[in-house]
Amino acid sequence: MNPQGAQRSRSRLFQPFPIGKGGLVLPNRIWLPAMVTWRGTEDGFVTPSVREIYLRYALGGAGMIVLEATGIRDIASGPLLRLSHDRFVPGLKALRDEMRAVSDSVVIPQIIDFLKIATRKPTRVFMEDAFRRGLLAESVLGLSEAQFEAALPRYLPSPRHQRDFFYGYRQTIEDLSLDEIRRIPGWFASAARRAQAAGFDGVELHFAHAYTMAAFLSVTNARTDRYGGSFENRMRLPLEVVRAVREEVGRDPLVGCRYLGSEDILGADGAIHGNTLEDAQAIGVELARAGLDFLSISRGGKFEDAKQPPVGEAMYPYTGHSGHTCIPRGKSDPVGVNVPLAAGIRQAVRAAGLTTPVVTSGKIIAFDQAESILQEGRADLVGMARALLADPDLPRKWRAGSDADLRACVFCPFCEEEDQRHRVVTCTLWPKGPDGGRSRLTPGVWRPDAPWNSRHVFSFADATRVTTA
Image (tube, rainbow, N blue to C red; front, side, top):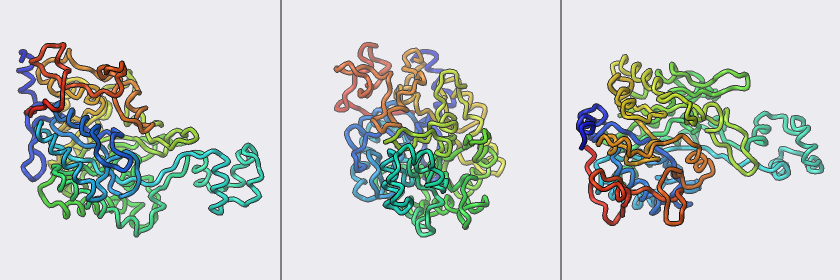
């Protein structure tokens, strides 16, 4: 280890971090946030490709690895992982066992509920479907597509139906009956129990972005019953979920959540709408009081300002202004742009007398940057998604003082474009494979004691345990 590496070993970033009530200790304070990989089977099972990428992350040395968003409803959802039935437990258990065999990383899945969404339909298909559902008179089918579109408000006076025409059908929380809402805590709790059975160290509840729980927390929640309107009502379902999960898994497993420090929804009026940092501070205090073991802070990523999708595609919540705040894309975007949100939430939680750890993320790319966040008390843990996708070995390289060997994220749109099109998410910086392509080759493990020309040679059959402390 070079002198810089010896100094790095004494940094706050590489000190162990106790977390939760069950005696768990993160070997360091680097946090891999959940990133959908689209590597599962079409019915939600673990594949060799899923095992490959997460074993690589485990070998890379991050203290916490949050498994990608994993569904809690037993419904068709494409190649997303699921914990919606006991049949998914064996595959996930095998994955966790493999990761534990090679690394001290703490590993938890992020569990998510999402509502129905459909692709944007061609005009004629929409017209015929609307007729079958009783929204259009049969005579309207005699119109040309251009005639229908020119007089759309006449034939579809409802703004909701007009939105479905332009953007594709999207279910909202206002569509849910009370019976449907009351089932959600049980789904989360059952998924958390299955995660426990699979050997994971806990769960992260997905209360962020464009999905069910974030919509209930939002000031844009337009329900008029006890699950909408006032702050107390908007907190009701999230707190019911937290209680149900904790009752199901007990005191020791980690139960935390990822939620939004700001929604940043750009309205048609040009103003920014949705929850602000002040709203997020109040939410964070209530979630901490409810006994969560950590708060992981994200930003934006909402459907409300997403761009119109092409015909045949579904809305993607990271295409509008709020999506840009969630995923700072440009090289010119400031680094650490979302850190002030985590800092503000941490300050409010501490002022309430609570010690719940706060995780920050958002274009954190350098060791000195990450270390200063911790030293200055702006967060307790540092999350990096794209940086670890580009180079899973970043924690080991940072600790060894081998920054020059890093494969640093260049903030190109490649990984996000793959996600938007539901293709296997990879990085354009990964080494080229035998076929000359680089988009499907998982990079090999980096070994600081190996010659440079062999540092990226890796076989899972030869994997040995690597401590991350």
